[in-house]
Image (cartoon, rainbow, N blue to C red; front, side, top):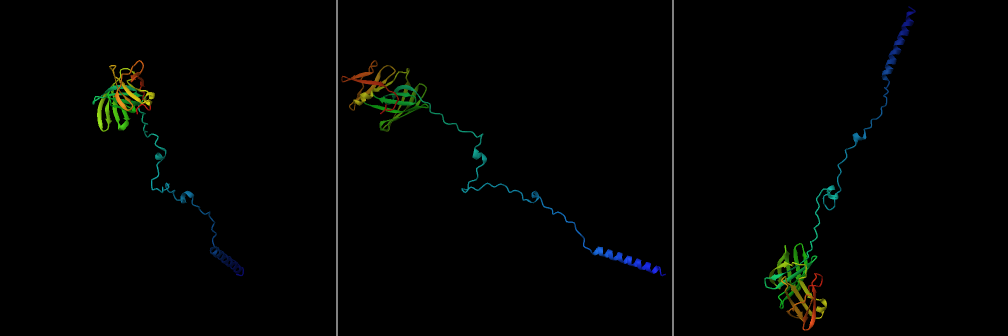
Length: 244
């Protein structure tokens, strides 16, 4: 019996120690292993890009589209207008009043002379292009005509009066209109001559401001005689100063 008592004491102590250890283990705080903080990715957290907004024009006008800024490469373009086609030629004819008309044009510039072979004479100057004649003269005189196939038809307006006319194209390139030379005009004598298809002439000669029928011009010398004086004439060229 003496031997059993110490053994019981030892077992009791061991059991008590085991109970105390278990209770100590339960009461101790648990150690939590640290974990790395999860950082959200930029793609997951960044807001979507806002749509691009063009700057506001202070004038209130909408911004030009690329096609308006650079031009559409396939857009049709307007071809520049072709230059007026100049005309060269000679025509003679009559107005419905009975007066005679001659027109000469050189590379788009035209001169016309109208006379009745007694006192009336009118000089005009202008353009001959794209099938049209447009001439002007003293005291507001105007001449407008259409150049056709072999003739010219139009209207002469002087002082509110209107006369229609038709002039036929010359059969040869020979001049149909002559005028006193500049030297002769400076001497106070002026005159015009129209050479008609039948070889006849008609014109008016003005001396010291007085018009009269022009004496025939000598084709061989290009002159005529007035009161014993030789008056020279030359073909009219459609240049500046011809029509006054």
